[in-house]
Length: 131
Image (cartoon, rainbow, N blue to C red; front, side, top):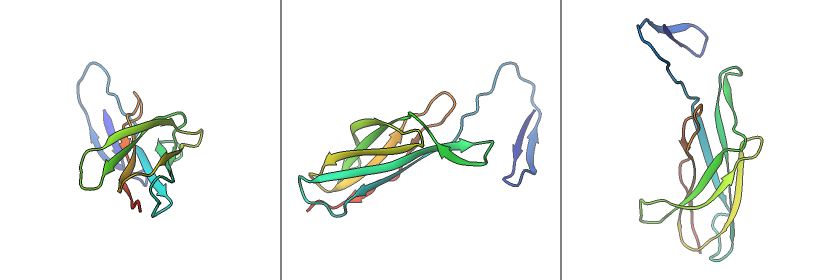
């Protein structure tokens, strides 16, 4: 039997099924990003921060993912292709932070590949104007 619950704790749906084996459920993950300063001078240091969180079914909120391997990716203005620049482990609270040298206008994002118990996550891109 599988039950889907509403946020209020009330039953939303219930399904009975005959099956042998297991069903794997992964926690939903989220990633955020912020690159600064905006704008940044060419060749200067850009700090890229963010967070990596996942659904906590006990607390009913998103909590930080510790030691998650997140990849910092960059997409040059006018392109749709992201390239991995470096990899960073999240802190004990799920915080992500690194620095890079600014060279051209474009979008920065964090991406997390997930684990057996946690789904993957990719932040939206944060556009940085390099002057």
